Length: 222
Image (tube, rainbow, N blue to C red; front, side):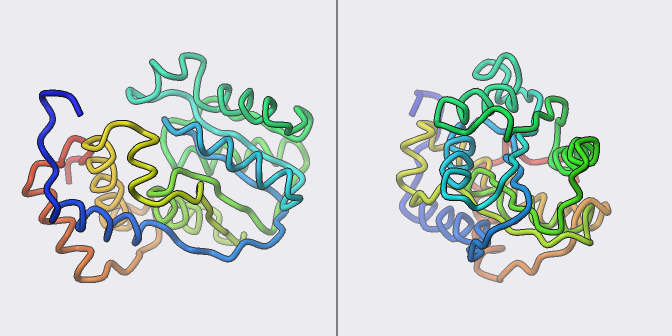
């Protein structure tokens, strides 16, 4: 943790863990027509997608994502490009991967991936979204809004909260993103971007508490 980052208290850890657990959909995985790896700062998405491909869960994998302020330095050629390269290194055949290098938000991830698949003559009935752990619920709600005729399953790298924090190496950033993603789960249905998701009272209280504590760098104006 750098000198300009605030100390995270034990209570804030518990609140963050509540939100972390809420964000994960805990879907039972079954074979699907297509998987879509959602671009982000987390290369674990590509590794988990590659592992699931090798297990025979799907025949076609889309990686989607351009760049964001969070990822431009780490993935200078774009999230999807780097994710594809990593998956190929891990044994996924290049011909099994479709590349969508332009999306800059989750709605575009879904819409542009759907267009890439259609251009390849693929019209799936079942889709698996592979994301970072705390993005599962938001990606599910977004996909259900934008692609309602498809069955959507979600998954992420199976890491415990503490292990994920260590893998990213920036505790405050992760807490900021947990809060920011939950805000989007709450606010985006009002804007027509996603279906509504029920937020339990204890999760909402944890969210408000972390906002008061200053974990706000990923909030959007609402």
